[in-house]
Amino acid sequence: MWRYALRRLAFLPLIILAVSIITFVLLRVLPDQDPAVLMAGQGASPEQIDAIHEQLGLDDPIVVQYITWAKGVARGDMGETYFGRRDIADEIVRRFPASAELMVLSLIISVIIGVSFGVLSAVMRNSLIDYLMRFFAVLGQSVPDFFLLILLIIIPSIIWNYAAPIGGYVAPWEDPWRNARIYVPPSMILGIGGAAGIMRLQRTTMLEVLNSDYVRTARAKGLASWVVIMGHAFRNTLAPLVTVVGTSFTAIFAGSVIAESVMSIDGLGVFFLNSALQRDFPVVQFLVLYTATVVIVVNLIVDLSYAVIDPRVRYR
Amino acid sequence: MASRTEAIAAALPPGDSWSLPPETPRSVALGRIARGNPVGVLALILVVAFCVLGVAQVISHDFFDTTLAPYDPQDIHAEIQLQGPSWEHPFGTNQRGNDMFSRVLAGARISFLIGLMAVTLGFIPGALLGIISGYSQRWLDYVIQRSAEAWSAFPVIFLYLALITAFGRGLQTIAIVIIISAVFGGSRVLRAVALVAKQNDYVEASRSVGASETRILFRHIVPNVMPIIIVGASSVFAISVLTESALSFLGIGVDPGTPSWGIDLFEGLPNARFFPHLVVFPGIAISLVVLGFNLLGDTLRDVLDPRLRGRLG
Image (cartoon, rainbow over all chains, first blue to last red; front, top):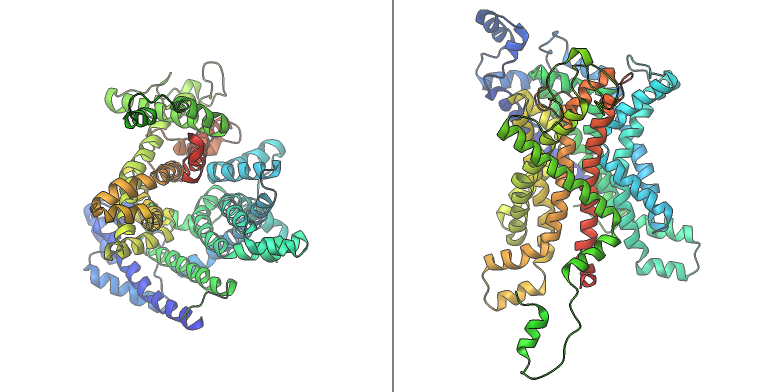
């Protein structure tokens, strides 16, 4: 299995190289989307714009530009932002913890809610609880998370005049209460959105497994029903569960941009959003690579976990 | 087409007097399904109402250059800005004095157009591509599947951010991203289904009586996977409406001048604490439309499932 993992990881640089070239060329292919025009501001003379081109190296042939950039990235130098000339590596490092905490919390919440609701709903099929949970799942898939996030801001503010603290990142071990007030509410919203998909799949696979012969055998042996449900049935739903958790991660990753933007959290998602609007090429180039790496690594973890869950799966 | 009873009667020797029990008329069968699925009926009403509104807005905007609403959704009326709901303005007015009810009506146009494009230009061609690639399983299949995996692994919003950096924002860029996602979404789902469908005995049977591969594909496989295409189209519509409103809400979607529910939420957010009506009505509009398509898809899945078909008579 480890050899398989290493081989998959060996492809990572190749994919990253391809992604970086595609991004680099795409950004520069349309001349009317010129960052220099934005930077120079309204009413700038063509000379000013040319000067900015010169300064940013945008006049060089695209191959030269790419090689200069790639050399920098390989050395760990991501370059500077076009706007404000700040070091990109510093900006990323500063914003990473906020985004990471938001995503990890959301994922944990969505797995806990999704799995427990899914199992309960399957075990208590066609009961009132089952209907309520399924209704909750459809609502979770239909009501947009940004609408829920807006309600999350305005309802406490109208009723209790409460607003979540804003400002820089505070680690949970420094000030757990402040950290929780910032990150738990939006994570709940993103988590509920992700939980809906997990719950629906968990219910379906659980129902299938509960109807299988080995579950009937286990019941016939006289095992306690929770032993059958958790030990025999639930274990066998893990493989599809891991797949859908992987998909939920992608959804939460996307949702984090929205959550950061609504809740005024200065994370990587908002950084990506603002840089895209300002056509800050080096930032967008790096963040595309970052996203691609995260997605590839998560997919690899999902694939590898099949082998851990199900001994029949072997990777060579 | 002759009914079942007539067909059997024609095959019998004349003079024989016996009859089949009368067939259940289609309307009765549909009524039975409707009574069994009250939620589905509600969803159908939501979807039909939205589609009628969407078509009406597209026709009035794109052919008559007006909006089918009590007030113009764009005209600025500073004297009535930020009013709460009233008889005159049931959804209140926004910071420019636009009637929110009219804006919600007008916003249906862009959601409807996006959903329609995603289904007709994206999902259906993608579904056909998926069926063909699943059925033939040659290099084409490999290329489509690997591209679909690569595209769908990447969160749409990041792809979109990269694309607006390159091409600028606007309806075109949104449409491209949503349509490509729908093509790959359709091809992935339908390929898996086609792989199963081609194992069926009726495929072997038609091949053995000399049917061409194209005929098998279009006369046997496609009709048999039709329920899945319909259900998929419903869910793609829902996802596309959600995506457009999310992008517009982030301020990176359609032009700010276009009435769109996402833009209403974006513009209403700063004043939402004191004027919740600015965000509540557009938010409910998006939720109801998406809920309608999701519930309709779920109901159709139950109703069209071939294993349950015996009940329809």
